[in-house]
Amino acid sequence: MTPRLNIVPFVSVDHMMKLVLAVGIDRFLIDLAAYIEEDFRRWELFDKTPRIASHSIDGVIELMPTSDGQLYGFKYVNGHPKNTRDGRQTVTAFGVMADVGNGYPMLLSEMTILTALRTAATSAVAAKYLAPNATDCMAIIGNGAQSEFQAIAFKALLGIDRLRLYDIDRSASLKCAKNLAGFDFDIAICASAQEAVEGAHIITTVTADKRSATILTDNMVGSGVHINAVGGDCPGKTELHRDILLRSDIFVEYPPQSRIEGEVQQLEPDHPVTELWQVMTGKAAGRRDASQITLFDSVGFAIEDFSALRYVRDQLQRTGLYEELDLLADPDEPRDLFGMLLRADKAAQITAVSS
Image (cartoon, rainbow, N blue to C red; front, side, top):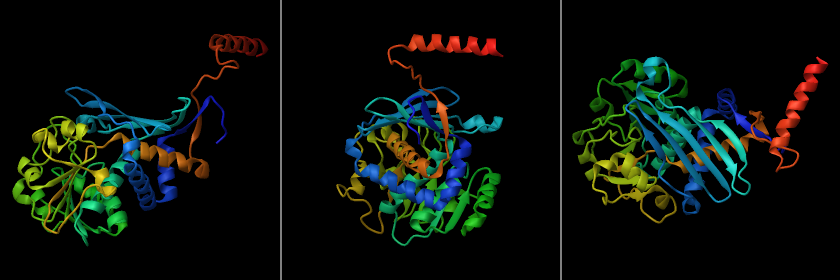
């Protein structure tokens, strides 16, 4: 990439799709998971804050910033469950990565597709530490936009090859099964959440409703299961019955955010949770035995987006899958911004006369 001060590399939706397909979906998820795990292992270096949220009756708009002291990243993301009625996505996002030393943006990228990929990769990384050994079957409850990404990530990182799908809208399950037909899964579409969890060693809940809902009840969860709870990600939105949480060892990304937005918002503020980075670095135990119920209370955190942006930026030179965006003013003399404007006007006048 040519270092011109006015230019910021921009990864469009089209570029992102081409990048994922050029790398290969499995390889993309495996490599992205490695970046996420690398950043979790240096967790203590990062600036951390709960995401900045603006809630309305229709949904939420959030900013998710973080920095490791050298690079700064943030993501703009929304969550509007009723959008699908109007042909819009429930979640859309874009992100920026910048140089901390001079404040200049280094990357502007779509993150609607990238968020789905990083969420799935994070779930699979967590399951690597928390799921029971030699597991091959996962239930996915909620078969919307995130479901296929979750399935492929768990297959790529953990070898999951049997899926049990359930959604209150059967057409969503049919869509998911159709999309995954070429990925060597044994897929069962189930008539209820209860049926879906039967025989599953991992249970992924990934529903989109903004309200609190009981997707899993206590009697549905047996010993030894790993629960990958993805759908609860804002105040008042949960998927699991409180009694499941009380029986589980709970693992989270960032407690100050998880206690506001995650399943643990149902519990007392001092209920014990373990941070995932501590498990990865050996500071805390993950799965201890075959009978333990582990719960990854995933709400999504800015460091995961940072990792995703960092990964994408590292692919640009090799793939060329970006465009040069004239985003930053670059006057001949840094203090002469107004002079740049005047020179542009003069150039426009000369062009008009000559034409």
